Image (cartoon, rainbow, N blue to C red; front, side, top):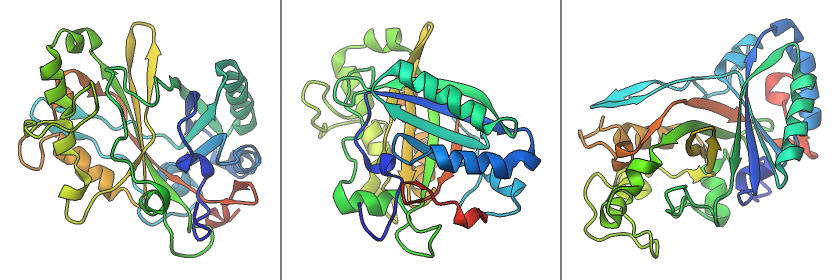
Length: 296
């Protein structure tokens, strides 16, 4: 991690074995200062990464430049919904039961100002694969490039080291996907499942072509930290991307939906997003969230 950018360590760390995504709505603005003090004491930025929605900052009568609510998008046969929340916490660890108890403690500490409205358990599959068997995050930047892509490296204390997070739940039709010939599956992603090599003759709708970070002007690099989820009869991917701004994710999502050139990403053949939110993740200071930009 760059000494110039005190990023929440969990942003840059490898994927954990287990994770739990918590989404909170604001019930009492009057109780928010006490809740934020409690959050700063519990969220170390590594075992618990925290991000604030625009509505929470508005309740504090403040703002962070570049943060906005997630925009709903519609393309040809494609809907990308917005389900923005006030607060998001990403609990990371190795034991699902431990994460459950930590989430219960956090929920109690934030009440009555913030109320938990959604919790999603996620897990690492193989070495970081989607449930389709394809490797996720192949084009992730590494080292100092990851810091530059995922965080704000300049500016005043309290903002420097902050990150912007984009989060979506995608629901997969795994039965439909697995019924496709493997060559057709490869064309959807633009990579071979067998060796993760990019296809030279991938169709224009291939996911790797829709989201090629170098193909945008300016380039649109993000740091992906997505993990699968499964509950009941549904399963998919909790897509999570960190950026120094929200633009990179947004231009990729618009192109995936076909809003740039009319070509819809092949992923929509078997998967669909059912949620979407933007969050500002403050930097850390002395092992705790630095909320000085919020007046704390």
